Image 1 (tube, rainbow, N blue to C red):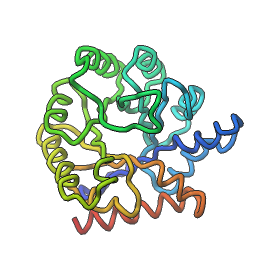
Image 2: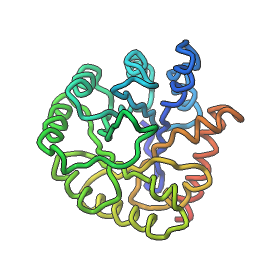
Image 3: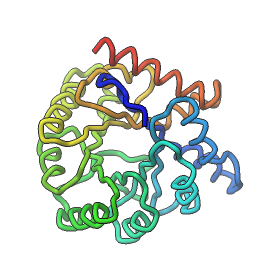
Amino acid sequence: MVVQPAMYQRLYINIDHVATLRQARRTVEPDPVLAAVECEDAGADGITAHLREDRRHIQDRDVERLVEAVRTVFNLEMACTAEMVAIAERLRPYQVTFVPERREEVTTEGGLDVTRDPAGLRAAIDRLHAVGVRTSLFIDADADAVSRSRDLGAVAIELHTGRYAHHADDPSALRALEDAAALGARLGLAVHAGHGLTTSNVAPVAAIPAIEELNIGHSIVSRAIFVGIGAAVREMRAVMDVARTRG
């Protein structure tokens, strides 16, 4: 394994919307697994995919193939349901990130409510830890949510950057991410972030020292239409690296 310098920030690519395009025709292309391989070839540190309950983009077979094909690490996003936990126990991805999910939403609209059914969340986390699967909770940049995530037994948190992405000119949105990230690090959590990040807005988030990993998908797949997915990954990586050095 290559050991990266402390300043290095990991970039995981979410390939959901490659599958979204495929499902528009219910055909075999574009193949999200091939996209994952090309992202890794371009320098991605990991691959993320969300297996939604309604299977609107990523399919069960995609997840099975990704577990086998990904050479870096595979992060499986999913709702905390009995069905999904059983799938994760069987396939054993490197990491499961529990996310909120509503059928009517276009994309994930906010962080997980960790005050709702904490016993169920804790049980799911314990089950996955028992089979060697690392766990993360996708939460809003809120001190109480960060503390509760630690208490539930999660190894990591992923801070929802949607508010910042939509209101990048509001200093309080970035400050909330900075404060939540710092708290998470102090509590011993690995701190990740993602949602709505692009090459135009990623730099301030990438510069936050406590955030060790970004999950980025839609903007990569969108940019790939014009320059190819490998080039899109390298562009994002370059912006992150510059921000990280200057930060």
